Structures are given as structure tokens and as C-alpha cells.
Image (tube, rainbow, N blue to C red; front, side, top):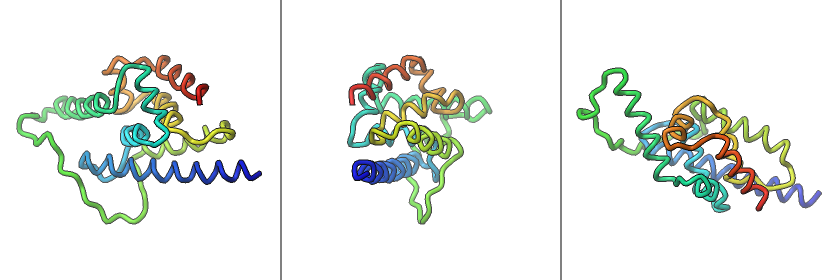
Length: 168
């Protein structure tokens, strides 16, 4: 019982770091609410390092992913006729006075899927690799398109997550 309680406390700390990091990633991007891409970037900075090791296994890193996300947004704007040469490419980081956390629908989906995943994986702490596992199941959206643009196959990403979780 003590072990399970200790694990839950560690999971709560990880969730707190993950949410705070996702909020920070969103603000850096000039967005008020984090989406799945921000949660993934946050997971890459978690102290356990497992998300980073998963990315290493598939040959990408946080900077490559961040650039791929930016490219996805730029391509979406260009597809509706926005001339990117007239747009400030570097967004201003947002300051927020928000008290309660809120996310974009994709960010909410990440958190709901993490909760569901943790119900089936009760014997190990919540890790950044779990976030990668959840995001890998998302077939649509900026995150999925960014990963595809980097040449990451979902099956390879899921295998890298499995390999990482076995090694923990």
C-alpha cells in the first residue's frame, strides 16, 4: 500500500511538471492554451528523460519536432492564402493571468488518454515515454502531421516507447 501511495504522489508531481511545461511551451509559441504538441515538448523536458530517449531511438529531437510544428502552422496559413513573408514568424511569448489550467481539445485528449493509460499501467511511475505513447495514438492534428513530416512512422515510435518502458 505504501508503495502505491508513493507512486501516486510521484505521478502527481510528474503531471504538475507536465502541465506547467505545456503551459510554458504554449506561451513561448504565442498561444494561450497548450495543445498536444506542447504536452509532447513538455514531456521531452521531464527529468526522467524517457521521452527524449524515445525520440533518440527514432532519430529526432525536440528542436526538430518544434520546427516541424512551426512548419505545419505556416503551411496551414499558406493554404488559406496568408503570405508568410508579411507575417512575423517569431511569435511574442504571451503573459497570462490565468489561474486555472485549460487546454486545447488536443491537449485535453492527451490528459484523458494518460489517465486511461495509467489505469492499466499501475506498477510504474508516469514517465515522459507515456506521453509519447499517448501522442503516437493521435492520427490527426498538428502533432501527427509534424511527426509524419519528420518521417517518423507511428509503428516505429510505438516500438521505441515499448523498448523504453521495458528498460525502465
